[in-house]
Amino acid sequence: MPTLQDQLLKAGLVDAKQAKQVSKEKRKKNKQARRSGEPEVDELKQSAQQVRAQKAERDRELNRQRQEELERKAVEAQIKQLILNHRQPKNSGGDTVEYNFTDDKRIKKIRVSPAVQQQIIRGQLAIVRLGEDYELVPRIVADKIAVRGEGRVVVANVKAESAVEEADDPYKDYVIPDDLMW
Image 1 (cartoon, one colour):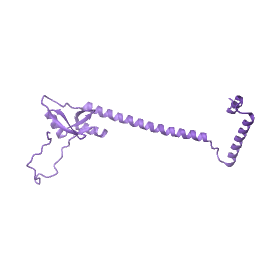
Image 2 (image 1 turned 120 degrees about the vertical axis):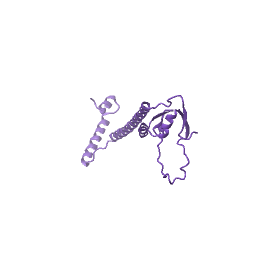
Image 3 (image 1 turned 90 degrees about the vertical axis):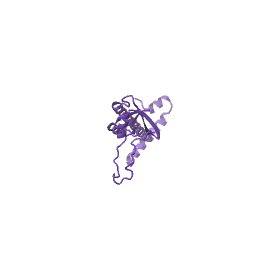
Image 4 (image 1 turned 45 degrees about the vertical axis):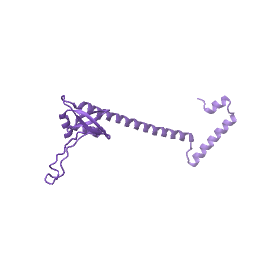
């Protein structure tokens, strides 16, 4: 295979004298580099290596972003699957009441049966967000959802123990409702 120098000579772009001078300078440069112990620095090779390194770094960053996106989608699918598999019926009969709750500083309401309302109040059921709708799931499932996705569990009541002893409580004669109807 002819070299670039041979091809340029054949095409008539350079003459034999210029080709000899270039090869002589190249040999001289190589010989001088060997004597001094310094390796020959090829700017073209260095720039190509630098471009390859930058491309590899860019590719690693893109792969990391793709991996994070795939993991986020997998977590969303797990949450959706948990909600769909464990959702509870809101109405178990004809009699329904409104249960009011807050979601992102907005008051929302769902219609549930009185028995379901009591389960929500006692913390046995929790309200979770599924897209634009709200579903009821058992408390254990709501805890699993809260671990996977922040902000998906809207209402998860906990029955708090009274911090004040009954004998010292000045308001013990007043009944405090568990759920205020707005």
